[in-house]
Figure (cartoon, rainbow, N blue to C red):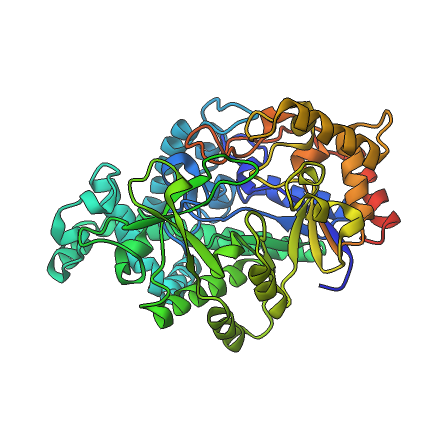
Length: 506
């Protein structure tokens, strides 16, 4: 990554619009246009997978599928799959937040209607495109569509609580389910086709504006997903299909008990070749959607924290060796250069950094982490940056800059005195004076030597903790923030464009 550049972090669910959740339609294209006007060349998103419990894009129902909630009703009208009136009268959804229950109910019914119309009178060209999509994605689509249809039939229960012949994928039971659920399966496939079609159109629009897309690849998949159900041999599961050990991270400066994620762990040692192949499939699929991929929890590839299933906190875990260089050698042999960003936050050892440097992967620096007493903090100060780095004011897991500045450190183990000292150092370091904290942070970040700088949109807008996207270790109330129509416009475009030009990022 040699050219200096900058961009914004915004998940499509956070876009404005009348349908209760952001989508891949006109508002997404307008945001790409805004980035171009603002001299920004990167748009970073979170994982695009269909979400399950807790609405988290890091706990998807399928590692290769797209989130049908992101499908644009306007685009379905353009394809002749909805009447204009069907998309023009949504319920009165709230503007600045996603109320997932009503959104899911309304959007699911809308997609079902589109599937019925496609079956009845879909245009021949659209039908050909759909069949080509099914052939191209059959390796994952067949299992995913059946999994979602079965999950719906069983009231949303996890697959381990389905009847044993289905949970264990006995061939006769699976074949019978495919026949019985054929209409439901076809509707799920069509929603995936619509997502793929609309995402490709958005990517082409962004490229036409000089904007590259940055994706996000979680290291782990959810236990209750089509991939674990279809390929249980890749994961550390017991005879019933339940995890024997689960993922998390140990206690650190920000959390006294660590983080317990609950994802099943890979069988890196016993099933190395198959696990490497699965990661290669996932990365290939990601690179069909985006230009650059942030790999979440990169340190887990060098060594991962394994917590016994049923443990109350992540404190009970232990380190185990990850796949290390063997995996990345395999990826590089198959893909050549690896266009990845390594999320190297948390408990980072020299071995983790050696693995990252061996493959030329830029790491991350978080400016709001730069002023505390955590051992990593000095490396997050801009004077310590190297060029081959992606610098952020914060990420989806952090408070906003304004929220951090106003807070007392309640979601960390910092004392009140720690917080006072942290803010005093930030004030001196940034030479803050009377400037708004978010503007000072963004200017400092873009002026840094780091080749790449990315800012969450919440920080551009100067929003507080109410606009936070996620609070780690909390299961509900996350992933809901949306910006409103009119909040983002010419003033922010001009300011960001001036900074991008001034600091050589335009």
